[in-house]
Length: 467
Image (cartoon, rainbow, N blue to C red; front, side):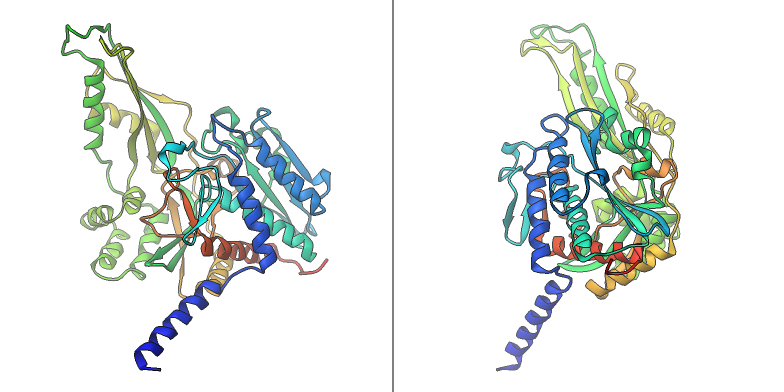
């Protein structure tokens, strides 16, 4: 064997070993995949589906695995919006640990995808389907691992509660966490919770950082609306509802909220400075020290870092006009804002009105925003995450982060249940397809996350492996 061939073989063997590290036993992989597939193929969008069939399917699996009826709850704000809560009993020496995931998904149209979004597919090393990343992977893993704990006779020092909830994406009166807190608080009361919102970052396929979410932005939706008398299209006038709206959205598209950091994002960028290579590493270190020039360069380098460093507002839906041959009487848009935790809704509203600068455009906030303070640092949690991360992905750092989107963790934090986003599912930062076309998760990453969360929860729960 020549030296070149030998080196290639060694590299291939190293890659294969890295991919095999952290793989669950075959039977556990098959169980998790079957649950995952079942969940993805149940349509659970806000308007075109229901979460109740997911909850019922999971309840059936849990009962078959020996969980008693008294430890399983299925119910919610409406017959189609059911949540599932299951309790795995420990010794009670510590307060319970809540494991959260949502089973609703963002709508997906077949014509927008290269495949059926509600058919679970495995192709080219990825699992495809709506919800594969957000958030049915974590939901499937929580349930598969809970069944595994029961088979193995694991006796933790605390109860482990899994809650699979409805309408995290749709929100409103059907939001599962909000409903459970108001109506069934004892079912999910816990010392703290693990949820979505933190993920792993890969560069060129190599895991470099496993992120733990301590805080998050909050969501505000605004309706931009223009109304006027309309008229016949053969008699156009300058006062056109669509033109007013188009001008407002154009000004919005050219505006950026100020760049800023907070305690969590400073820590994140400081840690990333030690991971990244090249000139960007120096800029990341400067961002942690509030250097505005470095912030601009870092924000321009990736969409994720831009969203981490500022509030963002973007148009997501349009409506307008009532006939092809009539001047529009209505033009409207939904503008979705993801707001930094320390910025107020009044500030965002006043800023939007200032940049739109058109009295013909009504700007109205819809619903009530749900912000929450960051979760406190837990040394036991971070130590457990670091130990588990290193065992599966040697060399990968464990970083605190602020998620650029929003999660149901805000509801829990607001009532005193600290919540931490942690998944162990690794993504290329430029290929995160949540809410988009052809959503996918790497097959290897899914199974390694299954092992990661299995080991992490055991470390956080204490106890002994056998009953």
